[in-house]
Image 1 (cartoon, rainbow, N blue to C red):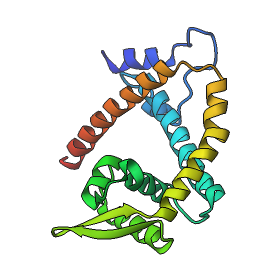
Image 2 (cartoon, rainbow, N blue to C red; image 1 turned 135 degrees about the vertical axis):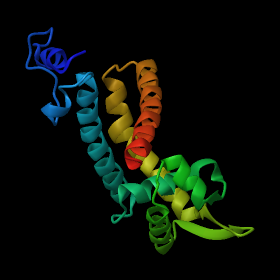
Image 3 (spheres, rainbow, N blue to C red; image 1 turned 180 degrees about the vertical axis):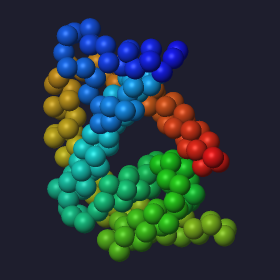
Length: 184
């Protein structure tokens, strides 16, 4: 497809006769797949809202100074009540900079929400009873303030699950593109 043809497609009015795709950067929506820019803008908004939600929910549950990453690390450590290696936490959360997770663990330790240990030469992190209690309170608040209202919209849970799978698959494409870009 030529540049002119792709620009024509991106500038064509939407089928509904509305304003058009909502994007943060029109110049990125003028390529071969304008809908990807629309998805990216949605991810930007959702990502910021989700991060804000996690920090505020943790504050409502009792710890006011946790960042979104701190909350994610806490829930990951609590998952299945098994000690986690720092490398595994980074892998699960797709965090490239291990120092960010190390800092989060130190912060969680300062609140007595997790404790560290060793498995051979590797540092491990486990949840404490105080951390488990915070995760339970967070879950209760989440059910009341987020899950019930979302469920009340009548959203198709199978579609949400499909969307989650699509997002995980797209994360692989973004990671591969990032590796390729780093080699340029």
